[in-house]
Length: 191
Image (cartoon, rainbow, N blue to C red; front, side, top):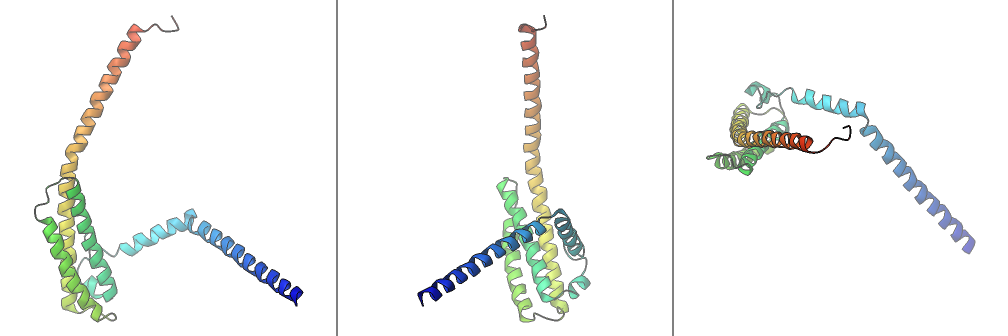
């Protein structure tokens, strides 16, 4: 009986260790596949192709939204609202003037919550015309808020970039003058 228990234990241990090693080998091969250049390029190409149906600031027209499922409308609406909020946060972090953009972001978020609740009611089929129009307006408003925040942040950061470029140029001139005076004073080994 004890011999049979030992055999069963050894077999079970071998099965567990074998399964673990097989799992690790499979995981390693899967990671190697997913990190291969062709796969990474194909994924990037797929994402570009998938996002090409959207114009720069959202859907081109309400007809585009009518072709989407409610889930797609919700996802694109939240994506545009999130981008607007991120742009306003970045402008605030840079100290750029944002006027009432943070308030507009809060209002956008509140309106998106309400529209999201409407879109959750009907999860399949076509998006109703009125809801599609509202979703388009929310996405356009979010795109406008994002563009305004980016412009403000760019202006605020532009002065910092100009100051940095001026200081770097000044430092390079000082270093060049210092090296020139050091060459004039110090003896060269060739002489």
